[in-house]
Length: 263
Image 1 (cartoon, rainbow, N blue to C red):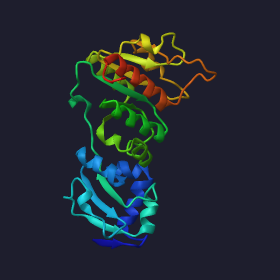
Image 2: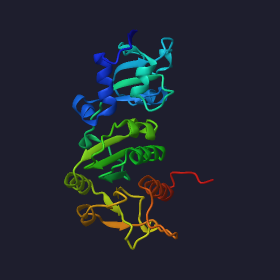
Image 3: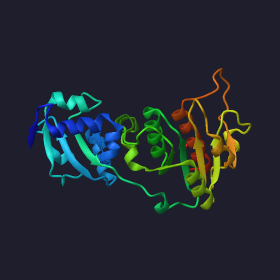
Image 4: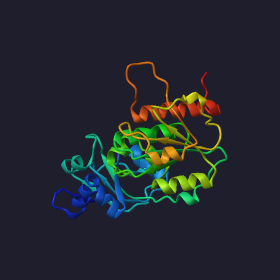
């Protein structure tokens, strides 16, 4: 393995750009994954690895689920720390972005889609991805988000679940057109709704619209929804963290579908 120890090394400077700057990830269609567990999830999800970087010359590449990538570099520990979130990370992978075409996705008869309207906080987005995957769902649509999907904080907070999902980025007009053409029931989560979550039928093909904590769902989505609902609350606060409320809604959907075992 070739050793990279200088901060002036061009390969290292490229890694820094990819790890720190969203526009660099978008321009180059690459992102960084740190940690053996997350990298293996990424490999298992058929992402193409560009190159590996380790901070220990004795790193055992046999621990990777795929060792076909020949571009392997030894990165000094000081340089490794500048491109990782966790100080304990011993390996990072430079990965090629995967693009998803929503018109090619296979939908089940009772497909449940989650739509995030202008999500902002990477930690919240990653937590939602993690929950969505844990509950056995697959397809998420992101509407007009300024947060890049392969943001390192999203990858970290999702524990790699971001790689297991089909994530589509569309504007609101195309989202509604797609849903109506495929006969989805569209339900919006709305704090001011008169309907409670238990009154919504999540058993059939449906799309759940989630807005930001500050501004809720935009008017266009509300006008095109079949119904809206709220999570009943008895405390003094009138709203929940976006990832928490999404988890509660997905749990209710699973309960209705009898897809979880409560015993």
